[in-house]
Image (cartoon, rainbow, N blue to C red; front, side, top):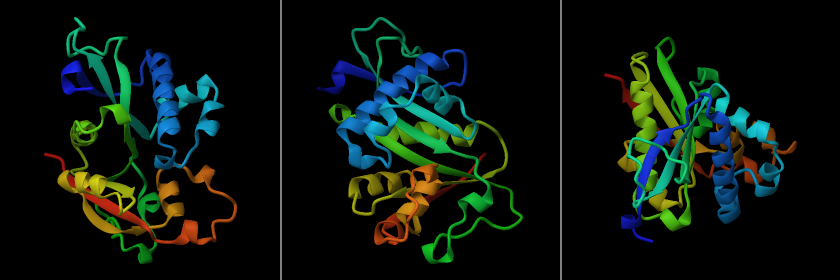
Length: 230
């Protein structure tokens, strides 16, 4: 599959009257992603395949979460680039969670992550769930999804001027870490799996007992991008 076969469109899922249609496409993308790359997610195909359609609509419409999509459009389509036609296939996603309260952003001192400045007006976000389907990788789509999301954060309102975007990633995923560095993210500490799941909004998926090494080892890399709105 070559770039010449497709044009790629990048957009935020709007919370409007078309959200039911968007939810159906998002469900299809998410379940396919869970099927082909289960290790990339804290959830599972079995859990999410059992969710009712109303839950998928709720996911897209809830406050504090913005989802960005990469859609592949066959080049023979007569639709203009500014449209998101029905024949496009959603092949990538990224999620932003926020704005977060400082107390929901702060991690224990042993993480090494610095705290937001006390009394300073800052906006805090968590970036997560970057994924593109395997057949469309190697085209820079992950980078463009990130750029779409970061551009949205920088421009959707004027204040506060200072904006922090945090993500958590496996440090041995060198290609992904390099991608984030190229986008202006810097290493900011180490997190546990339990902390990462809470930060990503998956607290309810944690088992009752999280005392084992799997959940307490500081094996995750924290990266933060500090952005100033113009």
